Amino acid sequence: MLEKLDIKDRKILAELDMNARQPMTILSKSVGLSRQVVEYRIKKLEQKGIITGYVGWYNSLKLGYNHCRIFLNLKNIDRTTESKLIDYLKNIEEIVWLSWNEGKWDIGISIIVKSVNKLNEIYQKIILNYSNYIEDTQISFLIKKYYLTHKYLMFDKKNVYPYYENYNDGNVFIPDEKEQLIISLIRNNAKISLLNLSKKCNIDIKTARNKLNKLYNKNIILGYRALIDTTKLGLYNYHIFFTFDNMNPKKEKRVINFIKKHPYSIEIMQSIGKPDLDCSMLFRNHFDLHMFMKEFRFLFSDIYRNHRFKMITKVYKDT
Image (cartoon, rainbow, N blue to C red; front, side):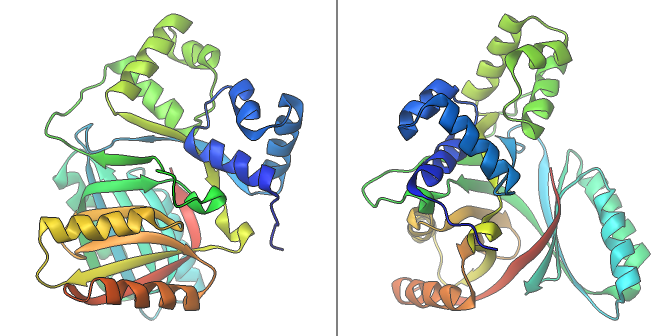
């Protein structure tokens, strides 16, 4: 059943999407409702499964990690083997994203590792254990990722919407033990209180606040966001893989800016390896995707060669 949101619920979601840690007094003032009413509405959004959690986006590349994506196409696989493969992949600690898709690739995997040797070890084990069921693979290394806000919730062409960049500017940040723990805790629960954060880190509240602010100011912690199940709103995640001709930095920037401003764009990825560029967009159906790509091809006819897509039908892991 699709949920219909009134303007206040949309405003609440938009605010939590931009900053899930903002004080309730500020949030309620922005929405124009009392604190009690806002808290009630948030609880209802959580109960309906529209809000599924609160996460802290962090800059894995600036911490010196390699962010690799592996895509798999499968063959001759039955339900039992598929289930075993999914369970096997879910239990690999370094895998932070695992999805089943319709379209170009059956399975999408994101892996974060410090060592390329560790990545190769994980990849070779996957191939070794399931070589009879893997038709094709593709690997790419992320060099920059844009996390975009859910602009469609309260879209206005006049607004400039914030976004977050996961990239390594050449200066790797090495956190101390407490900072590493804070990153881990915030990553899985962006709304954790300073009191609980300080207790779990065994430090006082002032130190916890200072370390959290330091990580934010150093662009290690990028933002605090609500996780929104867009399928409850009738929107599905389409991942588009682009191939271009005659691309250069100026033209690439033009493409990225176009996608960034689109109300239904949520991520943009630049990688070493295929594809040339890819993005995640929210659409109601394939027809909406078709209309977007028709506009895109006209606007960028000088560089567009082709595209492929996958629609994410199930997310098995997102950490």
